[in-house]
Length: 322
Image: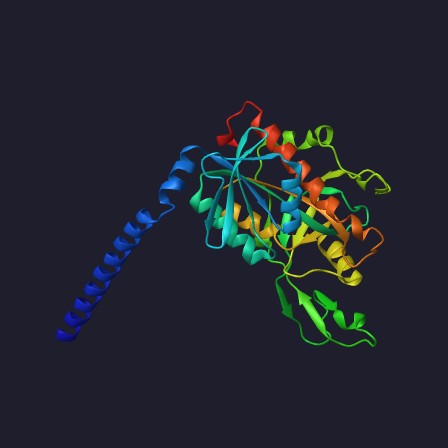
């Protein structure tokens, strides 16, 4: 009994200690030098969160001059990320660059949602095509996003879900098998209301797709916006034609990237609507004939995202119902 009382006393002291630490943490949070700045920024919200991936994506955004920085606080640096506050087409926006890979994307989007009053996520970036009907400069607006980087090794000669990587070893083949499993709970669907889906489809009429890098270098056809496809995410840059074909035949995915599923999953977990625009910058493991035109993937994905933001901001409907 005495031992029980001693344990109870220790537990009570530990709980009181944790409560005291929590109270101190709250006070430190209020005293943070950026607390007042962020509070003032949030008073001007809510905002759409524009989430982009790479330096190339940001270069396209800056070159477009569509983003108008806030006069009060144009940038906020938090946890190694820089959040840019301003407007696009008259719509209040906070944009942030995630960096490559799903872990960076997930951490960045969660921080964005935690710090700012975000009512919707507009995500754009580049992607590799695995569907042969897509070409550099095209933009996909997926209806499904999946994380296809969850793998487990299968026993030798296992047939269920096998991918015989050894067949593609150079200079000679081998026997290594990699079995793929895709949990259904990792397939996520963009949450977009009907009026905003309509706005996104109207982009076919409103987006000027860039076909040329300059007057002498143009793609063989005008890029297009493709709706309703599947995109896949995995933390790998695909340069293998056999794996590209596997992703397309197994999952019917049209593009591959390293961030979209993470953005989608964090948005869904926080019940924040989102939409994805991915510009094709290359054919995964395919021809490199138009490799120098990869920048057009970022430009056209940005153009589609900006047009969507403009359509949402001028729709007359409350963006709180986005």
